[in-house]
Image (cartoon, rainbow, N blue to C red; front, side, top):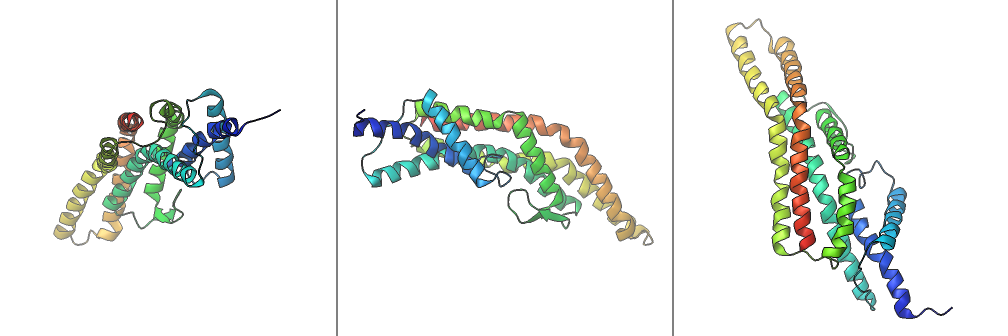
Amino acid sequence: MLISEHTLLQYLGDGFWPFMRLTGVFLTAPVLGDSILPVPFRVLLSALVAGCLASWGGPWPPFPSGAAAVMLSGAIQLAFGALMGLIGQIVVAGIAGAGELASLALGINFATETGLTTGQATPVLSNMFQWLGLLVYLALGGPFLVMEAVNRSFQTLPAGLPDALSLRALADYGGATLRVALLLSLPALAAGFAMNAVIGLANTLASQLNIFSIGFPLLFLGGIWILAASLFAVEPLAADLLREGLAVMAALMRG
């Protein structure tokens, strides 16, 4: 059985291109790229999905002949996959940012624990909202949408070089993180401001009402109760944010 060099490079490219693009996705996408999954498992899963795409997908770009060209093309595919996975990360970061702002407004940012993905001390409320963002992202089918987008991206943009307009759209979409975080934490911000004003006025009029023994517990309990009542808005905002992200991803795929 004789196999020519052209046939061998074609078979190698069929698995190489989707593997490099999926590796970029597994570096930045929520859940798939988080530290909760071991690195060997992520590499194995990326190779498995790349093998499935190599069997079902295509067409693939031609495999370069030189080593430098192979490294450059692989880096481009890796970066393009990382951009696609970053869109899902923005959805989760917007929800986690709401917990960060709420903890600052309610004065409970001193309560910290090891972060889910960073490994550093983060506010407990922010970590809880990050878990909530991951659950909402999974419930909306985010990982499956990203995998489908990777498959279709080879049909629309096999080279992996988006234009400047789509990159600008992605940069503008990053600002949605602060917008969603502010909208979700707005009830806690308003409640924290109102209760601080009332507690300060009561402490001025009646000094026996100690702010440390009465004011802070009321602020914590009232703020957390109002924040819990606003959790019903997480799913619609996350769905809208993911819908915007899919539009940005479509712009990247069109190039």
